[in-house]
Length: 500
Ligand code: BES
Ligand code: ZN
Ligand code: ZN
Image (cartoon, rainbow, N blue to C red; front, side, top):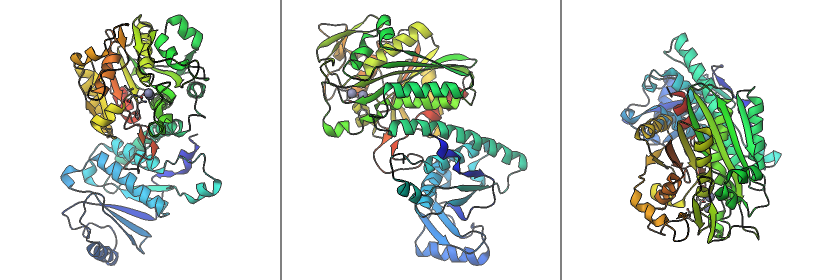
């Protein structure tokens, strides 16, 4: 699946044909160009003619006749507001422009404003390139595949850097490539149609990761019977309408350090069940396993990169389908922790599968911390829009460090509250709780998170509602492509790497 990633000569080869120049607002762009005087003047004139001001998003391309063939001048906005993540996203946009114009060999150079974290410079350069090079083309004709160009040569010009510093950039590039391989896996799994990705496909993928890990990662899969014996009535209730058998997949990376559980919502298709979704809401629901795919992407990286933690990854995989066997609104299921749940809406299925998973993790794995990633609610998209993840949790210190990791990696999230009074709407007259709250203005992302919190007893826990950022139906921007995005892989890896 990830064969595509090895096509680039990335790093420090001979120069690339297209020179990418980053230009800030309010500076004389012509002066800082690195060509001979005549070429500089020609580019300056062109920039003037196009009224180039250096604002973010501006781009002017000029054919030149120096050792380079093309100069692409990219506006970067105000120098004061610039950082590595802006650079990464700007590069990704520029690489996409280059691909569209068949400029497949590029040069990017170091400049002081990028700072002294040379490893991060390399990492972000590689992440920008690989993610901008990503295409989901499994189902395109050979002809179409050939037409779409990727960047196959990226030269990084170190400029003022010392050999020892360049070496650190190179290490960062290698790490960035590893990260991208994990994200490719996540994207590929999310992008494939739901008829091709079933719970047992996720199981196979987990097994492949374990096999390739040379013993570092182990996988255990509980089938329906085993889940029933453990009392996972909520999870199995969701699965029961489908022809596809559920698979409760548990991966284990035996690193040394704190024990962390990563839990990914893994509904391989969410039709809504008998509370059937309207067509326009169902179109993208192959992506409802994005949380699980993110966990698999992370484990792919862990198979080749060590972090100071013992990590479990759990995917309660199943399909949410209507049928003669399906759960009916009004049904009452009993979860692993003994709580009964009145299921009034079978489309609020993610929280049911996660309820049993959180209880399972706490009871049998006893971790120090649990983080779930779930495309849980449309309400979270209403609250924060498409690009920002909603974050909930019961431990401020853990929330702070995850937020820090998210900021470092340029993956946006925002804390939302778990105010208890909203939990009143989850009271049921006939069971311990019901699976939906109070309708339109009930803070749906919050009530869903409060529902989950009923299945966490004493463990530190963070819930990430990734319903928006996991999938992009619109145009690509920065490192975010169309389709499955792989949101969360970078941030979680950064979080795990920094654990003490
Ligand atoms: N998978 C959906 C949430 C979702 C919506 C993800 C849009 C990505 C984009 C989830 O299972 C769901 O259907 N939630 C319902 C809950 C409601 C019935 C309380 C929702 O958000 O409408
Ligand atoms: Zn649903
Ligand atoms: Zn769902």
